[in-house]
Length: 252
Image (cartoon, rainbow, N blue to C red; front, side):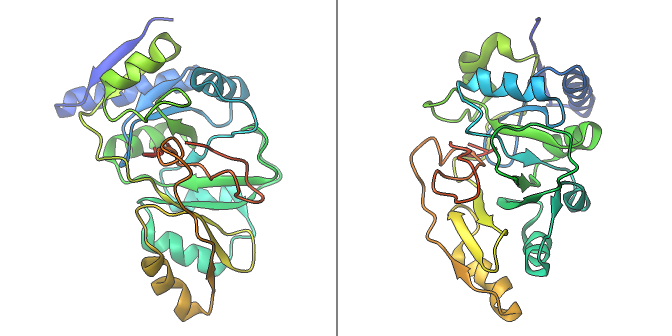
């Protein structure tokens, strides 16, 4: 598989990079895209072979399923079920942005992200290139662009060095904003449980939840450098499998 590295410096370059990445995803290939946290390794969430290729490229097993990125909060109802009204209030306040929500997934979904135990972690990134790709492809399984155990890529050079020929298209948008990951909250219970603290603080969460009479529980902390890089849940996430490291995710 030939690998392309495409700049987004000009509008013309950006459009070409988004198109190339979208076409690669539709072919079932892996792409690296920028997000508002770190670079992310992305695959079609509804293509099991592509998701498996993503896990293999990172050196992960099915017990560490990737989170899913979407381009709009409207997409959430197609992926998740039994979403509480206070969960919708969190989405309205913090999307697009660094809040990952763990929900019960729709049982009718024909996808295979790994051992998810009936849940899915979803986020809408605040990055114009990522959103442009997502608008063309639909939901993407995305984890930080790095091999497991290494720091999440903050630029395309780092992503190329770690992932190389496993990726069809690298979209280069310069230096990523940084290693502060998304905050992850579990919405599958009666209370809002923090699985990992990140860019959205407990105070910000409480400002939304307390007027609705919803308790905030959990003391999610960075598990290690890798989990601080991923957008996925940490190992003790209860009903959720460990997404492990950047979605680094540093988090994509």
